[in-house]
Amino acid sequence: MTLQEEIRRRRTFAIISHPDAGKTTLTEKLLLFGGAIHVAGAVKSNKIKKGATSDFMEIERQRGISVATSVMGFEYEGVKINILDTPGHEDFAEDTYRTLTAVDSVIIVIDGAKGVESQTRKLMNVCRMRKTPVMVFINKLDRPCKDPFDLLDEVEKELQIRVRPLSFPISCGPTFKGVYNIYEQNLSLFLTNEKQTADAETVDVTLDDPALDGYIKPFTRHLKDDIDLVEGVYEPFDREAYLRGELAPVFFGSAINNFGVRELLECFIRIAPSPRSATTETRTIAPEEPKMTGFVFKIHANMDPNHRDRIAFLKICSGIFERNRNYLHVRSGKQMKFSSPNAFMAEKKSIVDFAYPGDIVGLHDTGTFKIGDTFTEGEKLKFTGIPSFAPELFRYIENADPLKFKQLAKGIDQLMDEGVAQLFTSQMNGRKIVGTVGALQFEVIQYRLEHEYGAMCRYEPIQIYKACWIESDNAEQLADFKKRKFANMATDKHGHDVFLADTSYALQLAIEKFPDIRFRFTSEV
Ligand code: G4P
Image (cartoon, rainbow, N blue to C red):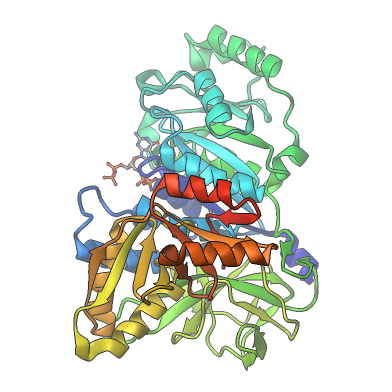
């Protein structure tokens, strides 16, 4: 197969949802269809169960599972599908955001009873920013749900995207009959006694067919009215608008019952984009370019505390990645080759000889790589748009064991490279400040420093409202600002200036008084 053909047949995407909406279940059913797994229950949920926030065994378990399920590849009807898993717990949202930089499209799962929830809204903001095409799967129709039109309105309003239903449910809960596939003009019947099987029964029957009544009585009239309304209210599906990230096709179903999943998958492989171009600081990289380029979007520590090795996940952006071939690690300027790069098929890892744009390769790492690192065949490129999200919680981090100073420094350094949290150094007194997105990360850091690096840390409170990266073309104003705010100035790990505003009032005042300074709440890696 040519490079072009390999690219065209790839779909790399993530499934995102608020915890409990059914992401794990849907992932598993997609793998079942792809023949990648054969029994339900093979994909473990990587979410930390409720109430288990201090249970470190749970954190370790979660880390183990998420290495195994970080990328799940499978083939379906000649299409190579790569599903990138995202952590369920919202304290790990940063990890999810970064994974979204490596996908070409997204499927959003929404619980039909709950509608759009907070986490979904946040994740959608990232997709909108990146113009990622999204599809929506409204799940759990076997349970009493909100009215489908209300759900569609809610998605449109809350997620700020136009929607177009491509299937429509016939009732829900105990009287759920199935879905009408608007495009194929057929009916998928929901037969509850066929739970967990590979497929639902589909009958070819149009809305005008007298046989329809026999299948979905007493909802025949209702369905016809609903479909009339759909056709009247929603514009015809426009794939270009979907690809621009402006229009979301919507499907209804019940993942646990494997219902509506095939329709979703069939449509997905037809309309979802193959690997798209990626932007770098200097130019746009098209996947068809013959030379290999790729970037590290995730680093994962291995489970075994005796081996501090890690896996760096490299997204191939162009060309063909080959085992044992030299590539330039742009940040260090060194040539590197990989003798055992991993590919991920279903929940298995295997050594791969070639990988193509859209594929994810796992590289063995002994602490050399950072998120955002680029590999090329010689060109000095840096991919942009890999976000480093604004930390919301801050604490001073102190060494609790003077004999283990080196271990602590190394541990902190490596954990920051993994993107667990961000480290700031006060310009005034040199104290180290850790900023995280979720409270759980502080415990994770403490636990991992102890168990993986043999170092002890303790935290001290600090009042910080927000970290803002500051820049200005007005050097005089910048210097003046830094002098006046010296006590609140810090440096991030790349040496950039960061203003740690202690209150929202202080920040507002600073923005007003220093109009030539740009305050950014995220720094790109
Ligand atoms: P998540 O990854 O998005 O967090 O959700 P997950 O798939 O783990 O699903 C959350 C819960 O919702 C699970 O139940 C799962 O069985 C259930 N679920 C998923 N899809 C459907 C559906 O279509 N209908 C119904 N009725 N339930 C569904 P749980 O009790 O939390 O876990 P488990 O004990 O069943 O594993």
